[in-house]
Image (cartoon, rainbow over all chains, first blue to last red):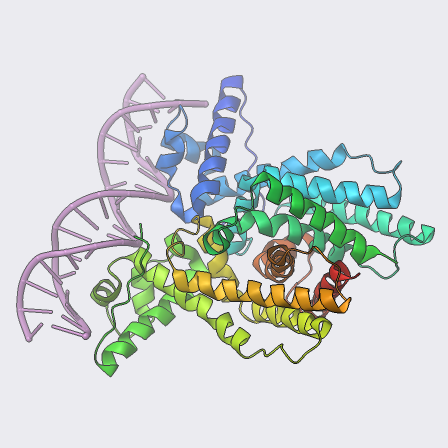
Length: 215
Length: 215
DNA sequence: GTCTATAAATGGATAGAC
DNA sequence: GTCTATCCATTTATAGAC
C-alpha cells in the first residue's frame, strides 16, 4: 500500500542511475505484460544485470516500484503535448490535431494503455497521490477549454460543451480499441491493430469529434 | 493455459448444481475485484459453504474456473438484447434505444466491465475458444447492420457506415467511463459514477452516435 | 460429492558480507 | 551500492478418508 508520496531516491553515481532506470524499464515491460500480481520481482531482475535486493534498495516494495513505473509511464504524452503549438491553428484544425495526436499516441503505445488498465483494476490507488500526473492531465483540459471557447466565439463550435466530457469522448475512442483489442479479436476476428483498421478508426474518431462539436 | 473448449461438467444432483453455481458466483465476485492473479482459491472458497478440492473437482484448474466465470459473465447482456424488439421502432429510435441499453448495461454492471478489462490484460486467451461468446456478439452486429440499412433506405442515416465500427463507437463510450473511472477520479477529481455525470455522458453518447450517423 | 490434511513450489522481503 | 543466501508466508493442486 503506497503512502501517497512517491519515492524519489536519487542515486549519486552514473552507474547507480543506470541501475535504477534499468530496473524501471524492466518493470515497465513486465508489469505491462503480466500485471501487478502476475509479475514477480524475480522476473523483473532477470531482465536486468542487477539483483533482487537492489529493487528493494531503490524502491522499498513491489508496489512502490509499480507506482514509480506508473509515474514514468504518464510522462510520455506530456512531452507530446508540449510540442503541439496549437495557438496558431484555427480551432477546427487544432481540435483535429489534438484528436489525432491523442489517437496516435494510444495506438503507438499499447504498453501505456495496458498499464492504465491494470492500474484501474487496482482502483488507481498507486497514482492517487501523484501530483505530477494530475497536473499533466489538467493541462489537456485547459487546452481543450481554450479551443472550445475560441471555436464558439468564431461560430464554428456550438456552445455548452464541457471540456472534460469532450476529453472523455476523445480518450474513450483512443483507448478502448487498444485496451480491448484482444477480446475484439477473439469475438469478431477483427484485428483492431491492423493498418487499414487503425486508419479507418482514426477517421471515425476525428469525424465523431467534429460532428459532435458541429453547430 | 486453457485448451479452448470450456469445461462443462454438469452435476447430477440439485445440491451439486448449487455447489457449482455457488463457486461460480464467488469466483465472479473475487476475480472482478482482484483479478486472476490477485485472487486465491482460498479466498473464493471462503465465500462459499464448500471447500477447495471441490473447485478442482468441477473446474480442474484456476484458469478453467476463470474461463467459466467469463462465459457466464457474457451471458447477461445476451438476455437484455433478446428483450429489445427493435423491429417496430423507427431506425433512429431503435438506434437510440440500442445505444442507451448498451450504455446502461455497462453503467449498471461494473463487475462485467472489470472482468473484460482483466481478460484483455491476459490477451483474452480464456474466451478465445468460446463459441457462445462469439455468437452473442455476432447478434449485435447483425442488429446494427439491419438498422443501418433501414435508416439508409429511409434517408435518415448516411451511407457507408461499417456496423462493427459503429459498435466500437458505442462500446468505447459505454465501457471506458466505467473501466477507467478510478484513474479519472484520481486525476480529475470527477466521479464518473455520480448520477448527474452518468446522465450527462449518456446524453453525450446518444448525441455522438446520432450526429455520427446524421446525413 | 465432499472433506481434512498436506505436498511442492513460488514469491516478497531481508540479513549480512563485500 | 551491490551481491549471495535464505527466511517465511502464501498458493496451487492433490492424496486419501468418508
